[in-house]
Structure formats: structure tokens, C-alpha cells
Image (tube, rainbow over all chains, first blue to last red; front, side, top):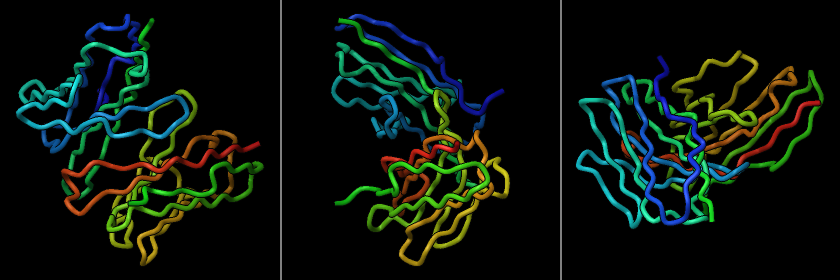
Length: 111
Length: 114
């Protein structure tokens, strides 16, 4: 089983739609979690950190479920500019301080 | 505040040659990470440096090596280049509260091996 797994998509949604991505992780000792956005052939950019209580930033909501070992990202009122690959990142921490990236979920917002 | 800077932006080498990639972290960041992203694939962890020492490395052969300098900038060296080394190499740095701090990426170096 992969350490971090994401549905690769693509998710094709119309503008204005609500879309949700899940990301599961295998190491229960994982300490911190992030969502990144990556545009084609560009570097990943931090979208948001994921806090235990869940957090929201405008149209984006991130949640963490430690019991089931997954994090989620909800995008409301999708815009064309949201089209990108969304990467979840899990920090296992400890001496190795491993940061594991999921392979990403491709979102294509259609006009 | 300047972000993470990487050089060169593009690098073209032939098989068997050596490549050196450079990275300057955000001011105040002591941790530097290197990742490889081959076309259409996910990010693969290469190396982590902190306070001048290699702390962890990914599942890559020894011909991938690097170092971190006293000013926390870093170099990634790839010896005996192979065609499959062609990829985007991303450097990222991280703040003092390492476990809860996100990574900040540079624009990457696109290495092409012919």
C-alpha cells in the first residue's frame, strides 16, 4: 500500500460546481498535512495547511480525519482558474521527518 | 522576502556527464529538500539537508548526491547521467518549526539528458 494515495482523476466539473478530493495516508504517526496546487510544468504552491479542527480559506475547506487516516479538500463555486493538479502532502515527522507527496488529483473546470 | 531560488532554469546534458543544480532557500530557513518530478509523474523525494547535514535521502542511487553550505544554500549533483534522469528538479525550504511548517518551492531546474 502506498504511503499517501489520491484518486488521480481527472475530475471534470462545470464552473460553479462543488468538488471534493480525498487523500488517504498509511502512517498513523503522521503529524502534519498540507494541500498544494501544481499547474502544468510549474512548481507546487501551498494552498493550505490542514488542521485537526478543519479549516477554511475562502472557497476552500480542508478537513482531517485521524481515525480513518484521510484528509479532504472541498472547493466550492469552482472557477476556471482552479484547473490544476492538487497534491496532498503528509509529514510523517520523527527522525526522518519524511514529507510524502501524493501523486495528485487533476481538476479540469469546464466553462 | 525573496522566495526559494534555483539555478539554472534549464540544463541540457549528454548521457554520462555530470550535472550540478543549485538552490538558495528563503532567508532564515535552514532546511532544504530536493525532489525529482519526471514528466507526468509525482514528486519523488531525493534529499533533505538541515543545518549543513544530510538528514535523510530517498530511494535513489548514490550518483545522486548533494551538500548544504554554511549559508544554507544547497547543491544537487547527479553523476553519470542517464536518459531517465531527465526531469524537473525542485528544491524547497522550510522554516524553523520544522514539523508543522509547509515547504516553499523554487521554480525548479528542468534537466534534459540526451
